[in-house]
Length: 122
Image (cartoon, rainbow, N blue to C red; front, side, top):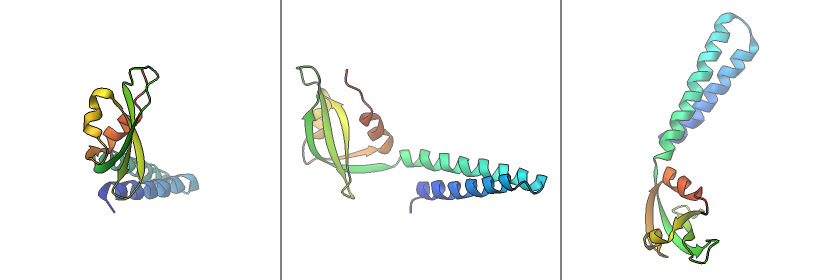
């Protein structure tokens, strides 16, 4: 288990415990302690997610298909497969296609993959 995943799971559990203490309403100390636990737990989830986005993943390029709505085929959908065999795709411009030839290995941050997945057609 990675540090980021551990922070997200542990933070979620602490936040749930804090919310349970907050909802029981058995004394002001429990309510205050529940609020503190919930805030700390949610903070740990946020830190874990942020750390996870800066994790590098190596992908194999499977294929690149033109998806441009225009005739110049300026945008491509590139299918990638990670080390665990999970497929994902990204969108790249025609001038970037040289970096994503079939069979090549590409190492990117998870945040970079997410931003390339959300690229819209122009």
